[in-house]
Image (cartoon, rainbow, N blue to C red; front, side, top):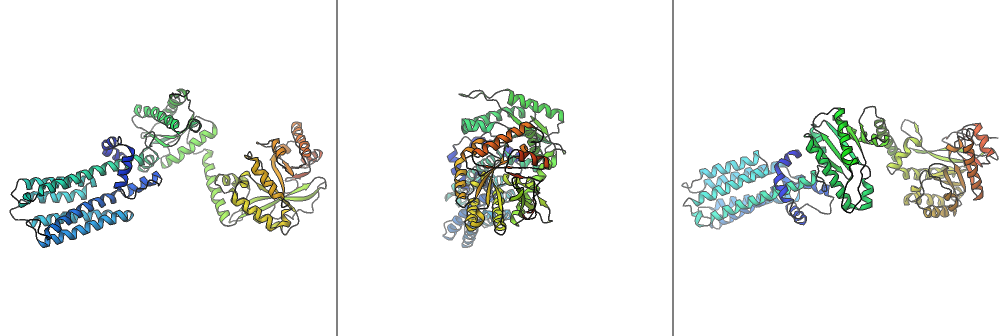
Length: 630
């Protein structure tokens, strides 16, 4: 059943019930749905409650019918019901037991419940009702009761559960009225009171079910803060394939406001944004505003708009949100910035609108329309391909070390090797880190690569007498599992530990000097050495060289490559070399790609050189051991 039907059917009871206090609503949910668990995540609770809603209804109906049948059957057996017989009593008891068994089954095993159970229950109830009517005295006016009972059973088969309950209310009220105007002995036994009581119980139950259903729908399809339709609502609409276009709208600086002012103020900001967006829904008939999550909204178009109209809508949004600051009590005016992505590709509206949004963010644009030619599509394909390749490589031991020589510029001989990670796929194709490294960091797989490299390189160099270096990031230094592997290998292979150099990659700022300092102190106890990699790139800071005792400083290739062309780069490199000597660290030049660069780094008195001029990374470290570079 699509959400719009829910809204039309349950809006009135929902708006009434929403005024009731939250604790009472929680207790009502728990009372009606025994499997409701407040410790579960809200989305899980709602999905589960909606899934078991029909089973819960059947449980309650079967309980009510079972108790009624048992009371009637026991009363007939004990001759407390006039004009009844032992056979009627036995049938009543049997039916009551069957109804209660179905109630217990529906409560205990709601995931095994099938709608046919409720249909069978209702048919049995109707047949039993008709049967005991025909056993009454022939003078009893049962024709009206036959009419009510027949339509009661049909109502459950043809209509929704709540409407079927209303038919039962009519049945019992009608039966009570007939008793009232006849001379049946039932009147003297208080049967009218019994019938009217049953009808009131059914009426109360129907009302409670309608209210609880509307509450669950509210939780599932609407955001609790802004009361706008949420992501679940949008997904249901997308499955109906009735939408023409979709705009994803992300408030760029919302997290800053949320962190600075707190969640309560953040909720007020979201409510104000939602209030402004609602004005668009009121202005344009076929627009629907959704709050997907946190700082992300969606505007849905149910009619086709051309690009000119959509561009005008974007400009209107800019005036509505960016130009007019938010005014909240006790706060300075708040100006919002946002990005939007728009798509009219109906086969994948949500995905393509999100791609357009990310394209707008990357390009620094206010908004962007999805285009097939967007590079972001290729980026998505690359990310998926790299993720699958990386996962397969980790699971099937396809991460292998390659070794690039590092030359001592004083002797001209290869003295050590840097171990570089590669992936070899099932077809034997080799992939370099630029293909998968960023994906590994994004998907928390980087540490698994490091652990594999440490194990394999220690094993290889336990058989080769040469120094080697391994790359470590700051994330590796704070990962307990990676540290366990490193210190296990150092203690297991003490003869290899003294030839090992750990290169701490300086591609991101070191967040805690104490962590790095402690790591350096521990590995040096095993005889290992430490290098700072990529010094001279983005986050370079001479404070690292002062505070941390590095044995080697590897000068970033972006500086080394420009040495022959630009004297300013030469000045920067000379300063790094001089400073390194003063703090007792040796220097390594990276990206040495030609003889000209080789000559310049020797003139700069750099200790070691590394790059394609000396040798490309290969799958075995001894292949170029005997080469000499003057």
